[in-house]
Image (cartoon, rainbow, N blue to C red):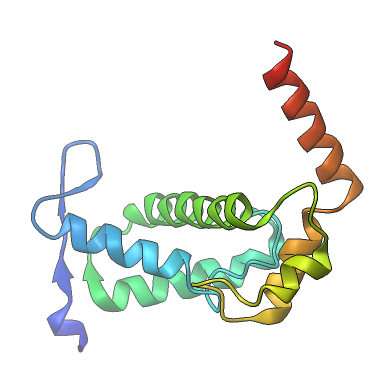
Length: 146
């Protein structure tokens, strides 16, 4: 698909994609969010400095497929950020358990949608850090004893 074949996005009065191509666009952003090359699982937070080159690459790829106003770049990065966080949360809900260890989770192999074993290991290991476990226990206690 060359630049002249890009898909034109219709934008509503709130600056959000709408119309017939919006579901294709949302699906495209979801695919980007699950692409371990463009949105590494090993980076803890979206706003970390290490993510800046990936932000630029995401926008470059998106602009090569879709035609939209430049002000939509921020919205696109926010949408991919949400989808990336949801993907990581989904992985955690399916694979983390307080009775499990890093080794037992790694022995299960790579889950669907994860292509890099090193990124997967870094993400799984982060679930067992003292800070994360302390926050998890605080959250559970808060839910059980409001």
